[in-house]
Length: 132
Image 1: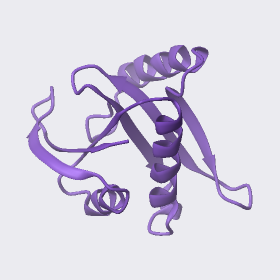
Image 2 (image 1 turned 60 degrees about the vertical axis):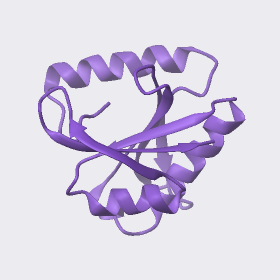
Image 3 (image 1 turned 90 degrees about the vertical axis):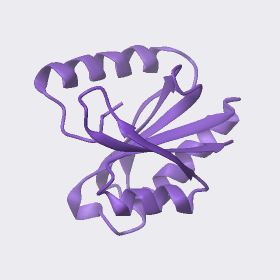
Image 4 (image 1 turned 180 degrees about the vertical axis):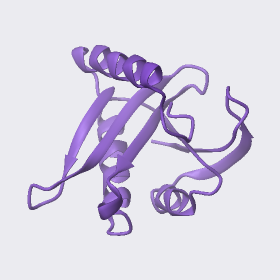
């Protein structure tokens, strides 16, 4: 979980280590580089099992130059297809309450708002979920 903020160096090291472990498994969980149709790197997406939520958590980050160009909506759609083909039943995503564009991406992909709560750092975040 990215907790709706920028990672510290230690958190980034921990998260990337976890991604490497997930990518070593044969399932859909893991991190994916994302490229446009023209081969331009636009960001990353990931599927992370979240036992607390009983779902696979979808995370994505796009380069600012790629915002508001449809990449987020398409990326989340592809992650959902991958999760569904892998037999997963429920997806979740967490956003910063002020990140309205990300919330719109989730809603376009069939997510529903569940609740707003404080993450482990005490910061307010919004939880979205959907069945697969």
